[in-house]
Length: 169
Image 1 (cartoon, helix red, strand yellow):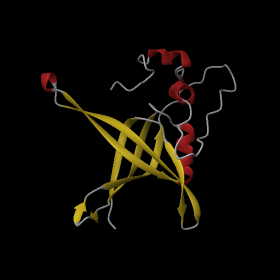
Image 2: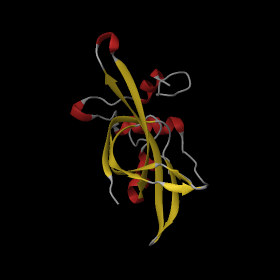
Image 3: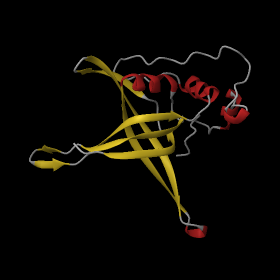
Image 4: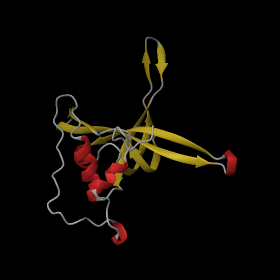
């Protein structure tokens, strides 16, 4: 079966990661789904426009478990994976669909930013399976992000809108 490689860069999660267990060939396997949204800007001047693209990705195994543990709504990620056709016949008509399977997920938030997002939203229940909660930070010392910059403190989350939603729509 042929597939096409897909890259989604500088995306943020529209919701929490939904984790559940399915029966695989060699026993139970973790499966997670997440929806990542990325924006593309086109044109210039008054003709400048922005287009949002949302993709529902499927993750498997340890990658699925890690995503459920460390990612939450609003987390920033880069995702690389593949898209496959999943066409089937239903009542004599062909139904066309595509499945996006993640092969690589890069976590772009600092540890402190990720913990603040997860603490604010709590666990995402799905099909009766508990989702592991993030452990609170061990020390009060502020974490440092890449290139020595200070990471966003939980107080920085006050910049979120009234509903506590970092996504503007």
